[in-house]
Image 1 (cartoon, one colour):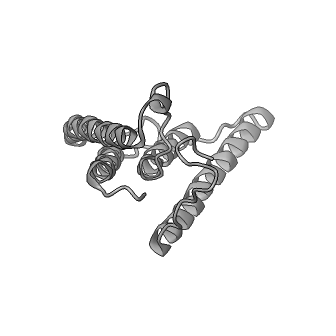
Image 2 (cartoon, helix red, strand yellow):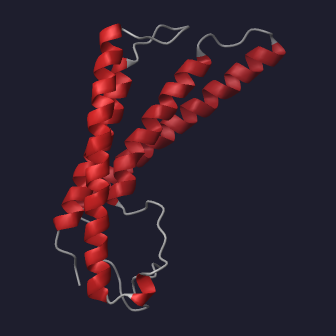
Length: 168
């Protein structure tokens, strides 16, 4: 139970599209994690049993981890599951807590938009250079653009939350 809700408060059920999106994204995250686990297991077995490591296994694992982390960022923002400290929340009124929440969401949106801009510029440079991974020669630019897009989406979510009507 969240410290912001009393014992009798129940959050309204999310819309159907949100439940379906969460389910699809949960399955996708599970598939990526399972793939990473399988790839790592196969690499370890081939490396230590047959002295033949999986060529490029580390690169693929890195890229899958990048996708997993940055695809999860908008989900964390949407669910308000970022790490928070509630040192002063108990001293504030409900109205002051709501205002603080809006201000924090607005600050997060500004920071995320700034990061999006900087990473988008970096992605353009990386794509322009044609950077690839060392072993498998996987083009890196699209992954950096993906990072920027997911950070931008998180910024949009925080911007929406800073102006959205809070229930209750």
